[in-house]
Length: 162
Image (cartoon, rainbow, N blue to C red):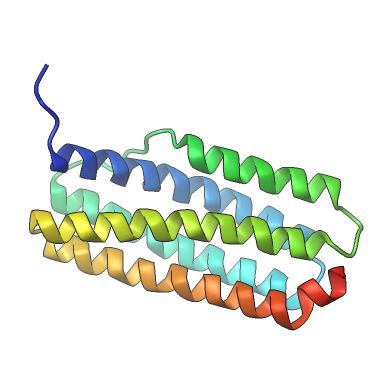
């Protein structure tokens, strides 16, 4: 068996986040439907559109690498999304639902921030300048979404839940 290198890990992680983004894209409309606060609904809908663009960027990275876009099962995102489903079921109809949805969404964002940060670092190390720029664009969006969620939680969602 050949020794694995950083470029192998880079490709595996790319497949991981591609799979994760596809699942996130399926989850966001459900979260938007469950949300009570109109601003939170709108935020989930806006992030779904951003996620579509992020998937397209990932497909560009696969193309740059000469690889077909293909996901690899990501147990971490499966668990995070499952937790979000549990929150939607257990807190449906309560004042705390939106706070739980924000919490679940931030868990997703933090996972994505970690993945894109790592991929950007590796892309730089491996000399994939175009991929680096694509990862950095997505990383900026993910950080902005996390900040919007925090602001929304602090300004209204958490107060309503209390």
